[in-house]
Length: 275
Image (cartoon, rainbow, N blue to C red; front, top):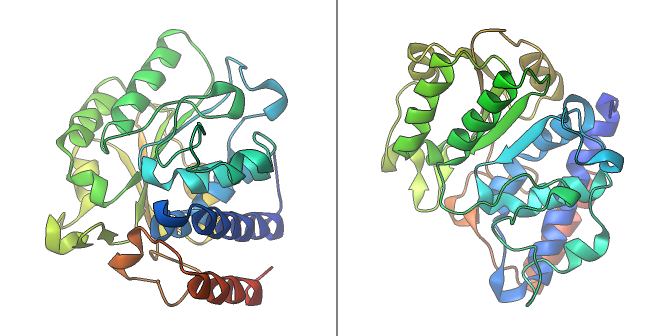
């Protein structure tokens, strides 16, 4: 897919709208709106113009691989997969319903574009290293993209994976960090500070790019800066809850059970910003 900037902006809006709808329909189960909204442009750009993936040929051996390490924002991934033809509206409507395979954390479903099952945070990058290494050993052309959260980088296995990625010179591996500064219980810097995450990755011999994670052009440029021998990390500075001022930058927006009043208010705000 190769969408224009305007089309990608519209796709990001659709992701947020779908996330809001799924969260409201989920009732008491709620949804992780904050991180889903902060990653909307990242997902829209990846699926709109970067990833070599095709719903008509989902098992292509040379397809790019996308791994959602911050698995609790699955509803944003489901949304972009639906918008790009990998899933149906009925799939989104079943989110968090009894018997549905579309839950808070994803279950591997290659036919619908879901590469891995998620659960505990922190292991997505290690999986990405394995996938990228397998591709290199088999001389495949595909790239591997892993989306992480900055709070998730508290996990030690992230750094074990980072060391392995540079050791094996995985130039087709991209780690994208949705750096919204918040996690479940508060500000990331208060819970477990990482003073300069870019410097740390550089110390592990990664190609480091720092961008505005809501700027589509910046995302596209960062992804195009591949180094044949070094893995690339894109540190995307974002706003948690981006798109709805009431929850922007609020840690309580990490997971929300929407009242009818909240749903209508947030829906109205989104409609005002529609592309």
